[in-house]
Image (cartoon, rainbow, N blue to C red):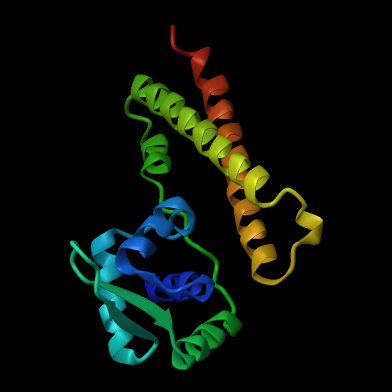
Length: 179
């Protein structure tokens, strides 16, 4: 997947400025496909050239003009083409796993594992709060709302898995600290 497709998905929900898209990424889709504000603006320009999005300049009193982007028919067609492709297996890239493999500094691994576990717990709480707020009745969901909930569930399951892996590492290493 390219950032282009993540932006197109976001624009199917509603038109947005580059700033608004960046905020949406920070709050949701960015958990699964992170992007900087600069990357989003660069890709929006390229997508506009390709005809996938259309930008409309809006004048604002007392503030700089704002460009709002909307998905075009060509963008919808590209999103349909991409969505129909089979997804390949995603590669796991993890500095942490490589550090575990090297196992050069057990104390640093323990500290890193504790930090990672706390981050997983924090993100899990965010995901579960989002699920409770936006999807109180998952059985009633359809279409894109069902897809959004399922993506969120993937995040929740992943955070549970991350916590379990950290717990396994801590169990294996904490008894060895004094050796």
